[in-house]
Image 1 (spheres, rainbow, N blue to C red):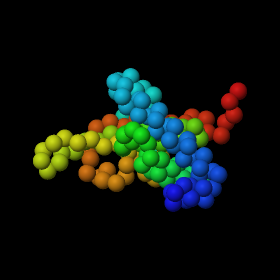
Image 2 (tube, rainbow, N blue to C red):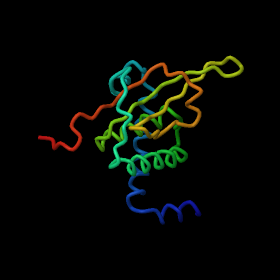
Image 3 (cartoon, rainbow, N blue to C red):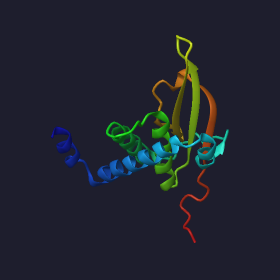
Length: 154
């Protein structure tokens, strides 16, 4: 009941972001179940990166999306770990015509077991997966460039 009360006190904008996050986390979880070779082309230009220069107009949106993904992922009925979060956030940014780069990395645990991690960056800001990313060696990256930001379709 306490969490419901907190949810009801959120702004309308944040409630909508949480619903959108939940939807894209589900979408990303479905993509994760497919062979990666089929999913990779939808993630952007492989082995490319987007700009690291900040866009001051996007900063609050990036913060809000990051927070919504983090909150919603703890309430999904499915696994919503790093890759699922990164893909979901990438889709949300793409909807808003904000470019991003998804990174895939690997590392070895002390036991020798190989582990993987994914994180998403937009400008200089890490949207998902920044915790522990420095331990991982980047093995692939995907740049989602938005060519026509602010341009109208038509």
